[in-house]
Every structure is written in C-alpha cells, then in structure tokens.
Length: 197
Image (cartoon, rainbow, N blue to C red):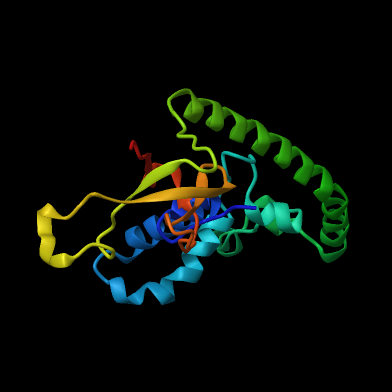
C-alpha cells in the first residue's frame, strides 16, 4: 500500500508520472489558450494511450485490446493493412490477438519489472535514506500554512519536538506530540530531522 500525503505527493509515483506527461502534453497543445484544456484532454489522452512506452515496449491500447490501434490518418490514406482488410479476416486476426493478449501482458510485465529495477538501482546509488526508530525525538519542517505569517523570514524552520509513534511505510512516519496527541497524516522522512536534547 502506498501512503501518499498531501505534503508529499511524490510518494504516489506512478500517478504523478502519468499526470506530468499529460500536463506537459496539454501545455504543448494549448499554447496560449489555457482555458480550453477540457476540450483538448481527450486528444492528449488518446495520444498517450497510443504511444509506445519505454517500460513495456508496447502501447497501453495494445495491452488492453490485444491489437495495435488504427490511426485516423491510415483511414484517410489507406495502408495495405486497411485496403486488404475484410470482415472475416479481421475477426480471425482479432481472435488470434485475444488469444495472445495474456502472453503480451506477461512480456510487458517482465520488461516493466526489469526497467523498474534498473531505475531503482540508479536512484538508490545516489540516495541516503533517513531512518528513525519508534520513540525517537524529531523536529518537523515548518510549512507556510503552519507558521505565523507576521514572522516573515524570522519564522522558525522546524517545529517540535515530536516523537515517532510508528512507521507508516517506506520512509514515512506517524508522529505524536510530547503529550501523546497524534499528529494528522504520516510525514515523510525528508521533512523530519533528529532532535538532540
């Protein structure tokens, strides 16, 4: 289970990665017409679903439907695939594609696992994970919504101390005040530092 917090949306990596691609493509498509994004979204999603992904080596469309998508340009300017097509042959090809869809998904899964291991190895080579034990005293990074706005640049950068109550996932911790009151949400280790008495 992924524990994603509002202050650390990076924890939900796949959704953030997909959203980033869609947002960037929308920006390119819209240019200066930012208010028209809802009209362009279906086209951007279609383009994303019919683009071959590095992780799987296949399109999302082919993984779901078992065959490659026929692009609109190929319907206007017919290719050999379109011009030689008849209903019976098409149905036979589709049934063969459905038979091999599980095999295609397995191959895509193997490729994706290998890709993720390669990315994780590259990432973990340069990262130092902060580890805390249950009961450790920590300071929590002070965010703009928790500090007094009149303090300006003199506002404290860290709040606390708090006590680590439990681990909520990879690098996320649940905190309690020194009086034992739980702090809402789990907090990522990058927003915590050890408190020295």
